[in-house]
Image 1 (cartoon, rainbow, N blue to C red):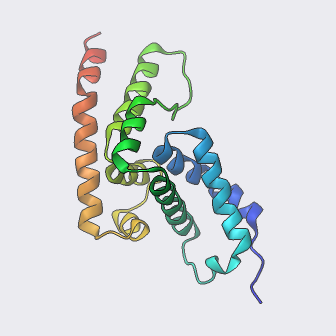
Image 2: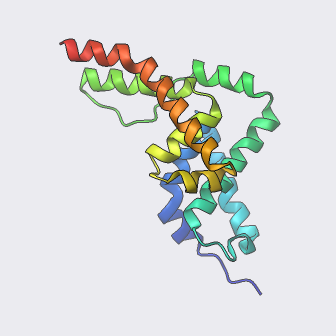
Image 3: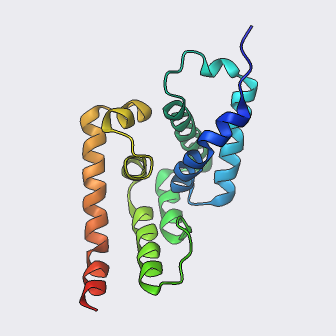
Length: 172
């Protein structure tokens, strides 16, 4: 008989990280909430999924990533979804009354939306979840060098996209 899963504890400890990853993928709050609910329903229905898991957060992030990929497959091609991401600016960061900071956050959100999904996932996990490349590679089922190169390419694209804004702010 399987040990019951403490969903409340899992939610309290990991929902913020899961929400951030899913929001970065979907760029849509409604889809993010639906996927987060789907993840916890899946755990409630199949508590055996957590048996033998050494790193709960990494496992849950991978499960969330897989659910997001499944959602995109159900909805259509990756190119169509990418165009939607570019055209929708999601509020990934808290609002601020400082105009320069607000402009930077909006630009960062738009720049993240322009990254290919594979690079965006690695950049998010490295910068916002503070995972190592080894953990990212395991979580996304990638070779270590692929995870590191996707991060490097993603950062290069972010730098290129955000450099004019950085230069403009520093001229003031």
